[in-house]
Amino acid sequence: MHQGESVAQLLELAREVLHTPLVQVRQRDGRVVDLVPAGAGASPHPLTPAQQEALRVVAALLTEALQEHDHRTGRRQRRVRALDDLVRGEGRSTVLQPIVDLRSGAVTGCEALSRFRSRRGRPLPAEVVFADARRCGLATALEHAALRGALELLPRVPAGAYLSVNVSPEVLLDPGTAPLLLARSPERLVVELTEHRRVPDYPALAVATDRLRAHGARIAVDDAGSGFASLQHVLHVGPDVVKLDVAFVRGVDLDPGRRAATRALVGLTREVGATLVAEGVETAGELAELRRLGVDCGQGNWLGAPAAPTGSSARDGSDPDDGSARDGSDPDDGSGPAPPRGYRAAGAPQRVLRT
Image (cartoon, helix red, strand yellow):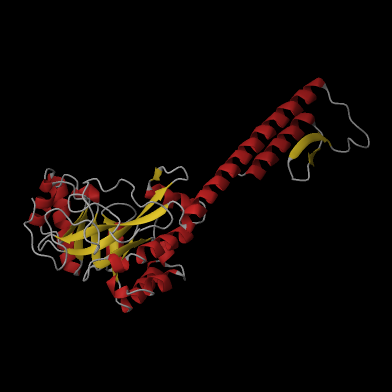
């Protein structure tokens, strides 16, 4: 309930109990400090003990309501200040994770992933940070800042590979987003549409994606099979790349249901001419099964963990090492992120596929 509605209801309750109109006495900062019968300054009306007790109850309820309001306001102000820091780059960094062709073993692309830390250095989950930014009205500012950090790493992506960046549909429709994406080699970009909420205007989204495609960028649908109508994204947007959600990849070698869902998406993407990328590949068994099912590309810690490219700080104001590179491998010679297990970077000598 809104704070003003709460106060109004409490005042109405007091009028019913005391059978006399009340007024609010406020300080200059607008805070309620007292409640007295209307006209009490000119001709006071003595209150009965019952009325005085009722007035004390109303005052206590108002005090509690105002304190809760102050608490919520202060908490929101702290969140906004913390988010402003992240927008400016304090506590925000960008890492790259390779996307690997499961047939040839080449690194065909790298996804830029934002990493966040609190003022005390504590890692913050990216999905929580972006959700908080939406609630505080800072989604566009934070996503634009993350995009700028990602695009700065484009020169560090291996030659011939693309850079994949994440954009929510609502931010993609913002007038400032397309110029940002088109400013640097859009032909090397894949723009992943993330799913945070339903898309209210698919025709407008199609106009925005067509503009990017006209300059050579490609469009991907992220987390296919989960979230808000991701398959509708496939139908309405006609993506060039479809990212298979980790929920279908995890244990695909052990679960007939996951295998069937993956097989269906392989057929769908082939029918519409899109590339299927499996997210969250974590085991040799998953990798082998995905190759057997005909999935085009894969991404996950088994193939290469997110890491800052050597020769670049990958910083937007903080240390990029957030502990996400769980395989403990070192980055390569500076042409991109850490090389995938058993794979070759584009242009490097072929290595035996690890399965």
